[in-house]
Amino acid sequence: MEKRILTYRKYMDDLLLKEDADWERILEEHLVQVGFFQHERLIHLIVTVVFALFAVLSAGLAFLLMALGTEGAGSWLFVVAAFLVLLIPYVRHYYILENEVQKMYGQYDEIVAKIRNRSFRENR
Image 1: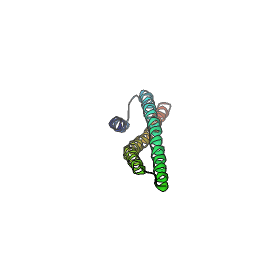
Image 2 (image 1 turned 180 degrees about the vertical axis):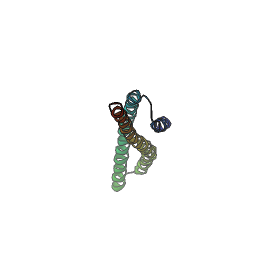
Image 3 (image 1 turned 90 degrees about the vertical axis):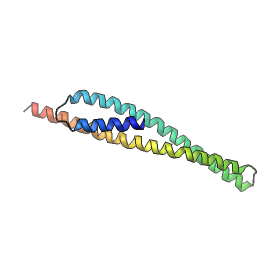
Image 4 (image 1 turned 30 degrees about the vertical axis):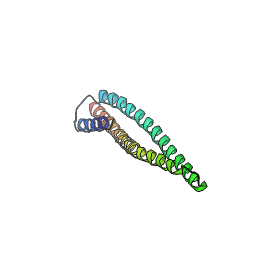
């Protein structure tokens, strides 16, 4: 997904350098793509939050078991480490999705401005 979103945003950046294009069609396509990426972003937000909660809860349980002197508390530290190791790529991926979708909102604004400018020129 990371490669797809980066490739698409670059494609749109290149397209926005053009002066004349079918901006209405491009706007429709762009809104569909942004919708796909927003959905992906939401799913990854949910997964990231769940992993973060599991990491915090397992850390709390590990520290509680260690404070009580329970045997096997060290094995919970392994679980905490596993959640943290998995959480790092999820946070990175969500960060990329979030930032790229925000940039696509800016692209949307540029497309709308191009449509308005063309409409203004045609109506003079």
